[in-house]
Length: 138
Image 1: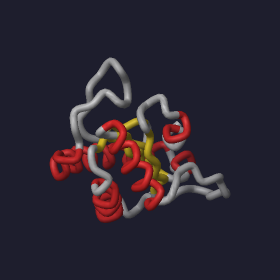
Image 2 (image 1 turned 180 degrees about the vertical axis):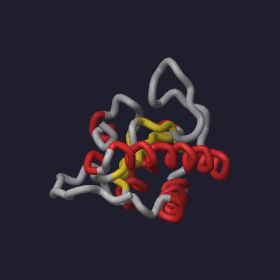
Image 3 (image 1 turned 90 degrees about the vertical axis):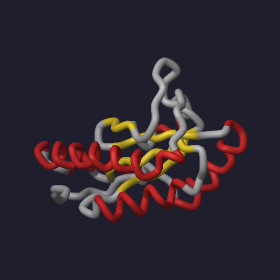
């Protein structure tokens, strides 16, 4: 799986260091926040490759939940109506409520080890209505 013709795009995410700082701030204020990861240049993948990648991300998200459940509190940060635990796939990106910024490098390392064919944009949002943070997955 590799993207077809790559074209320069504006970076949608922020650095890992900035993610950790934002997460620490929001967790101190509210007790949790959303960590977001989205596949870079996903529109350049063929439909078939994108579907395979989404299937793989579903498995990875389930494994992340099993391996790092202590960092994933039940929350309604993404939507007021539903409570989530663990990463939720949205297209080819995911959102997960975290209660500790230490989860971020662990999630990223897991993604690198288990989905090396893709690279990701990262961001942190206060909640699902934080437009600045959520722009990464839109």
